[in-house]
Image (cartoon, rainbow, N blue to C red; front, side):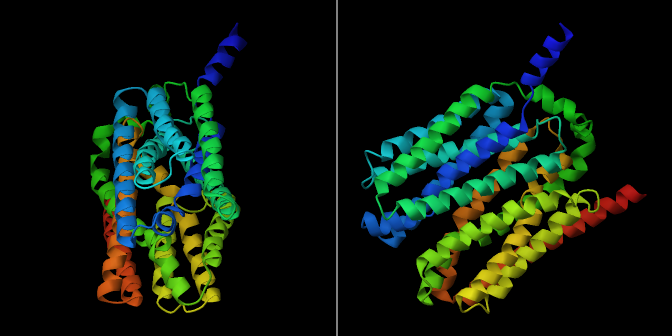
Length: 398
């Protein structure tokens, strides 16, 4: 009887392998679509680049809405039903794209898909806070590694399948999303709030955490500037590199290289935990990431772009996976959905602003001014994070 109770208890615990697999499948499916959207709207559907930019903006807004609503529903409704809502909203539109992919239906269906993906992103991170048998730092490193396996698979496959048929791209993406839906249906039927609240003593002492809220706000502002910058690689950098005579497939392969480095590097980053404070690791990573945009000012050929992207990826590997874990350390898990939702919202805001900001600066200046401006945005906001962090450490030392 005791063994049976233990078995049931184990089954009702959030398992890291399923959360990571959800991240992998969701991002494999998404990576089929996001590199394609601007080109598809412009080249295949005959719309202007401005129209394509508006579509990307609407997609980002829908993702932000999904981030917020997903976090709120996770905390106030049902974690499992919220997860099912997310995968339903992301899967059905991709299946419909197999049959309906003209203008404007492509844009409409992609907006709905992005709303679902926004929920999925928040749900994956929120379930991650409830994995009870691993430290949060390890959990989010593992989830981020799975995220990048998905990006590598998706970007590789779309490059192979698109020349054959765009319908084939939508068909394979649909199969991936259906796999995600089935996995969530059978493995996410767990009430996670009580598990999350048991995990951390600090999570039950919300009043004691009020001094960290200002730091969390500054971190979120910095994260937004990071993704304003990162989104330039997803938008204007393709134009910048092709203008220099570098073929588009070489640009696409940079994302594959990015994912491979992260997959190899993330287990190594896990080994840093006994030797380096998480906050120190993240700040160091952001500094390296930001420096890559300064070096972009001087990049003029493929080799230099590859070196720069490797530097960016090293910074990303050190910092991105740790950010949700750091926020969880600072805020506790009692409101995991709220804070993980906010984290994903600022990412979506950055990704929405970035292409518009980049286009404006390029139109009124040049690429070098753009790269320097985003470098300074990241450094200045990181400086405020560092000052606040130093102030908190000084208070704790007294």
